[in-house]
Amino acid sequence: MNQKEIKNKLKEAKTDAQKKTAQKSLDIQEAKLEETELNISTSTSKVNYLDPRIVVSWCKSIEMPIEKIYNKTQLQKFVWSMDVDPAWQF
Image (cartoon, rainbow, N blue to C red; front, side, top):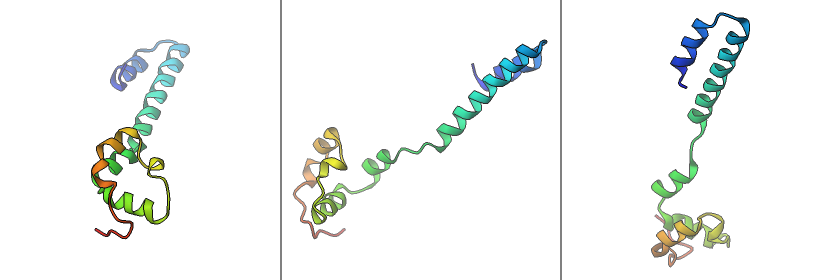
């Protein structure tokens, strides 16, 4: 049920129990909407906007395993960037 349908049910509610149920559903829908608006996927930005050579060179310079940054699929996708020098700069 979307918010509009829930608001209509709230208007049409005749008993207090129906009103409470409709209001609770509306509150849940609003909370879910807020959560999705606030939830930003950092992994999407990491994959789409960062040059993997930057990440690889940084990991090599501080001796961090690249597996802590990229998952297996991403490692396969960015295999071309794994030969970068630790001092590489963009």
